[in-house]
Image (cartoon, rainbow, N blue to C red; front, side, top):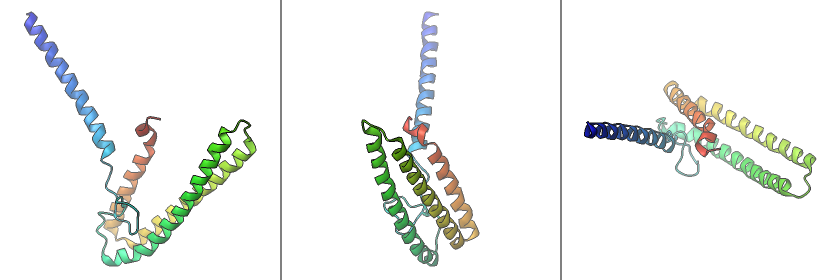
Amino acid sequence: MRSKGWTLILIFSLAINAAVLGVCGYHYYRYTRAAPSAYCPLSPGDQHFYQGLGLSDAQIERMEPLARTFHAKLGKLGGETEKKRERLVYLLSREEVDSGRIERLREDMAGIQEQIQREVITHLLDVRQILNPEQKEHFFTILRRSMKQENNWFSKQGG
């Protein structure tokens, strides 16, 4: 009987370990295998949001000036945001905190974020006009998936 008890405990322990390993593997796969981004003309790096939409050469040709303008604007706004963040950290780290300056800086940063949101929405509306109905459906599926992943940022970062 004693041997049978140890066998059952061992089998139970192995089942729990397999379940934990499966859950960990699932979460690792889920968070490291993000949805493939799609091809975006002139987008830096290998992550392209429009990849997989099956854009024709004519669509890519129409997309290139939009992408060029969009990425230039976002690059400029991103640079401004970074400078404001650095300034904010500086103001917060000072011995004497100036709440008024911090609030004005926060308002400036919120204004830049609003500009970024406007640019992104305008770009999405411009891109939408280039796509055919099947591409639009796929595009917005990718967009929804991307937004869900971004909304999980805190849980992925442990904060």
